[in-house]
Length: 233
Image (cartoon, rainbow, N blue to C red; front, side, top):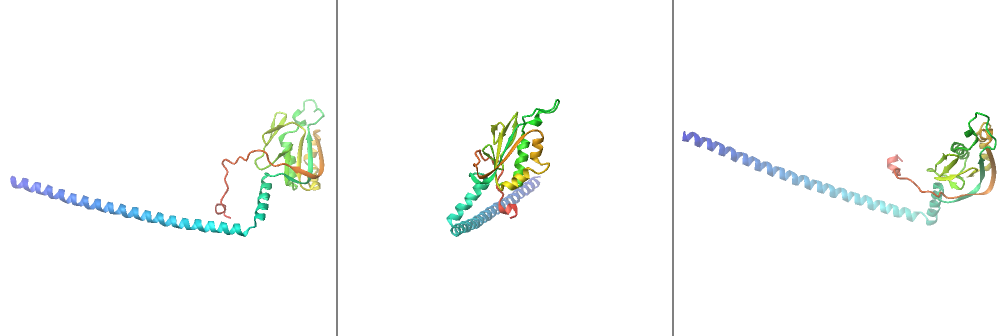
């Protein structure tokens, strides 16, 4: 019986020793793997950082070379041109003034009275026609219109760039006066339709017309420029 017990204990001891050795070897292997992996990652990160630094330095040198190659006066002119396109500076040139006022005639019995007063869509039709015929800058009652401008009805008045106005409404546009007037006076066009309901439309040519700069705030909270690479340029 003692022999059997001794044999059993020896077998258990041997098994425990083997398991211990196996665990020790496994632990050492895992530790080595982790150290190797960490070292490789560090080396990779250092390599990438060095490459990024080289690219950054190359771009900075390229920007500096471009700056040296462009005369300061040319840069100022380009800045002024871009500001003008964005509506940030006043503009002056030949153009026309279009004045719109509500109808003085009453509608027929049972007819909708709204047909005889000016709405936001009436102004927008005139403005779209002016732009389509080459208007380079447009303002309504002194409010410069840009990409984020809005014109909307508030009762019998209109909001332009968030400012309330009552009729008459004066639309100023810089461009070729004859071309713009011809576009507005097309048969069946916008002015003919307005006059049908008694809306008063006056068009005057101006040799020296001034359009003010945009007075509101630029609200680009969600929109952001697209990089050239991203846009496929």
